[in-house]
Length: 143
Image (cartoon, rainbow, N blue to C red; front, side):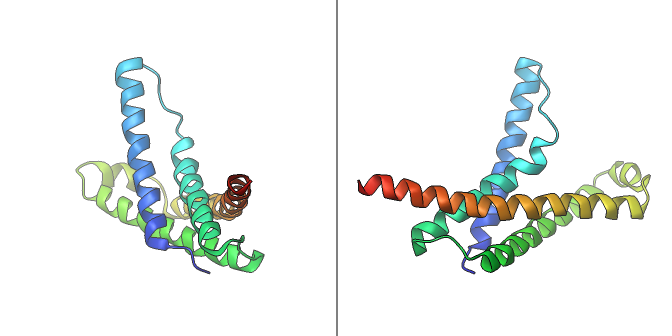
């Protein structure tokens, strides 16, 4: 497995920040709320697809199925760490701890497991998708 987890984390974080800016602009200037689910899936999709493209450029092939699953699990762990750090930072803000504490731990764990399952599948699918698309694009450039 040779995906760059630091680059993945940077792309994931940059995409989240871009979504936050876009959501603010849409709400403040257009009056349209940004869909909430997009913020969960889009950063993962963008980061994993770019990692697949980088892998294909470097190696000239897609990852094997086993390597792709290992990479997807590693990238999902990065997402988990980043989101746990974000939640810990949010807990330091006044009023947030009380609001978040109103839900049971079991419910939080259930939400976390569900979302990480989605993140894992998105990572796995779009890692391969990005690599395959990069190889097709490279083949078209050669012609």
